[in-house]
Image (tube, rainbow, N blue to C red; front, top):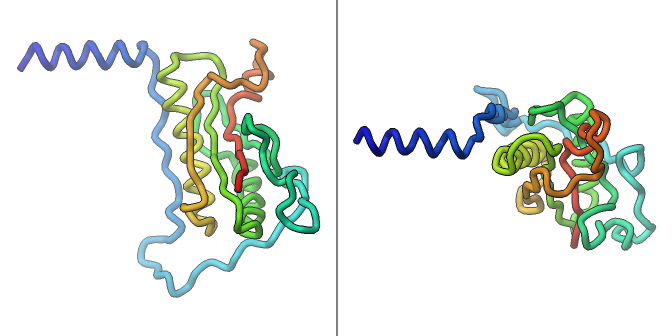
Length: 183
């Protein structure tokens, strides 16, 4: 028993690389305790344009609504995170509220929420943190009424940076959740 416990501890330390684990993400479930679903929140305002949502053509589902094959591009802006964090900032929440309205207005589209990190930390740590970031956005969109069946998450950790620099500005660009839109 002692040997297996010691082995487990050694494996856990090795897997962590000795670094601090990402924080647990607590998101609002959308209903306060004791409240019922008889009084649902009013639907969010439909937003079709803005700095973080791009307009689509008159048909509503034009090619520009889709992300390219790499998952980049698309009508929804990235949200960004603080260093070593997966908690949504006020700015990220505001952006996600606009995204929720846009997603609900474009029922034929699916959204893949990609969690990304800067290049500091181990591969394993960044994959876990990227998943927590994607999940935080997923959970918040779901509380805003976006059907979970239209959303999925994936973590790329530090493997797909948008800026290969080693400055704080470059790292800040890479700490993000990206939204790839597809049919």
